[in-house]
Length: 295
Image (cartoon, rainbow, N blue to C red; front, top):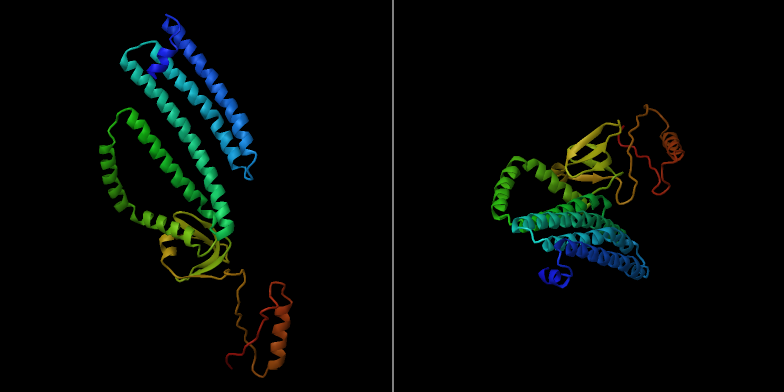
């Protein structure tokens, strides 16, 4: 940055040089803005996907702002203030730049995650319910990386923070082991996909109903009586599950019927079959059947 300052040192007045520096960076920012808008967008028009067009829209303004802020950093050097002022002013501007790109990268990561999982889902059948989980993981990773960059500039030693975080993490892990177990169970449900929203499932513990929500902590099912049951994912991941909606959304229903002694068995069978065939929800194949179990 010092070499750039010397090359733009036009006037004997530091204020004029600072103003010229800011103006020069505004021009550079505008040129970069035109490059992104004209050149990159033209290249993106040749691709089949729209994701690159959206990414260009997302980075358009951050690139412009970043160049302007770098110009302000350069302008401060012309004023030749005390080193302490340079340190804090530059640190503040670098922090703002980092935050701008943190927000931008989070938005881009959400876009890429949705686009990628939707494409993979069409090929492999991977559930789209995993999108919020992957988005949150990417968001946390970006925030941690950004905080590391900011703390490094401010020369804050992060080693004690990491050590403290490790100790605190161990304490939290012990205190919230059930929550962590439910989270891991939720991840396994997202990946393994034993069921999806809308499926009718029966758990080994006796609960049965339609899956209405799959969260990171619990899975919610609605019974035939319209009662909502929240089951911790740790239990869901470690119990036998009967999915009556898979692999196809149909299942057999057994209905016990009692008849009086002396009834005409053939007539009873014909009557029951006629009633079942009149129901539009009963399939022709496999056809309904009547079985006499006991007398």
